[in-house]
Length: 171
Image 1: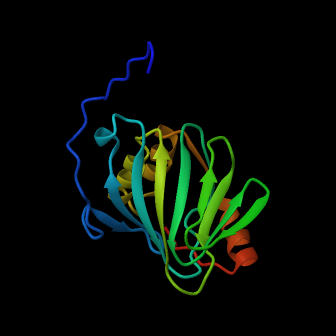
Image 2: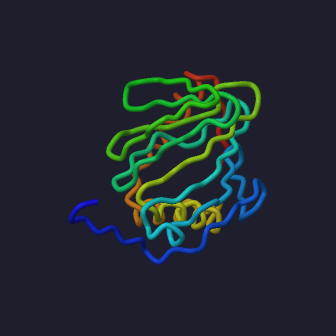
């Protein structure tokens, strides 16, 4: 290209990642399998794999101040509340959850749903690691949310579960 120079950050060598490779944690309906960490992408993005149990709410309504999330449906049907819009995404669909918008998502079917989530910029993949390490400790969970500038509306859970016929684990 004329006059433009592109440099590639010093990243790891190309590789493949097996479907069952990498660390995994089950949050009681929402699983997280870390696939590509931000350190591997120069901080541009990270990738996690979320298996979601049938009719499970993945999270309370929440609001990211720093990250955009792009969810690709591998199996099942993903439901999402994006602001005031409700969407159902079948296999092969993408759902864009931009920062600065209240949202949540769930398995909208009676069979397992799996999504690949691309998070940009990277760093938020470590939120899941920290929550897993503190699982069951609500005080630490609140501190983690604050550190990642994530607002979470726990009071939304009963209404979301009733409205969409979902379950959510007790913390």
